[in-house]
Image (cartoon, rainbow, N blue to C red; front, top):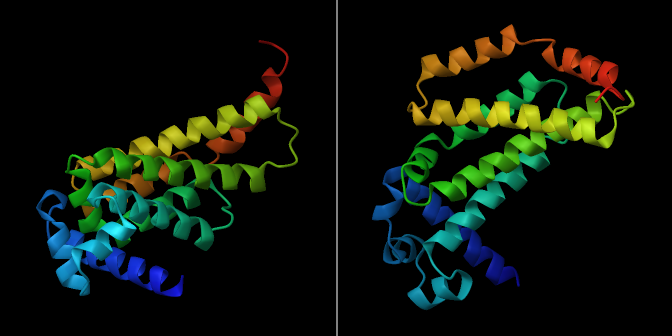
Length: 191
C-alpha cells in the first residue's frame, strides 16, 4: 500500500509539473511516465486515463484547502482562500481551464466555494437560529457569488489588477453577510 501511495504521488507530481509547463491537451501518458520514471502499465494500474488523473489531482487540491482552513471568520476570508489557492497553481489552472476538461476544474472550484462559505456560515452564524432552509439559501447565495467572481477572474487571465479589484469588491460588500442573516431572520414565516 505504501508503494502504491508513493507511486500515485509521483504520477501526480509529474502531472502537476507538466501542467505548469504546457497545455493539458499536449500532455501524454508517455510524458508523465518519462517524468516520474515508471512504465505505462504502472500508470494504467493507478489511473484509467489522464482525465481520471486530473480528477484526482483536483479533488486532492480541494481536500488540501479544507484541511488547511477548518474555519473562516468572514466571506472575505473565504474569497481570499479561494484566490490564494488559484494563485498557487496559476499556470496549471489556466492550462486546465483552457482545455476540454474545464468542467473537472470547475467542479473542484465549486466544492471549494461551497466548503469555504459553509465553514464560515457554520462558525459565524451557528447560534442565530436560522432554519436549515434559510442557512442553505445563505450558503447558496455566497457560494454562487464566490464562484462567479473567481470564474470571471480566471476567464480574464488572472490579471493582477483584477485580483486587486476582487479584493476591493470584498471591502465594498463588508457587512452584507450580517445584513442578509438579519433579513432572513426578519422574513421567517412571511413567505
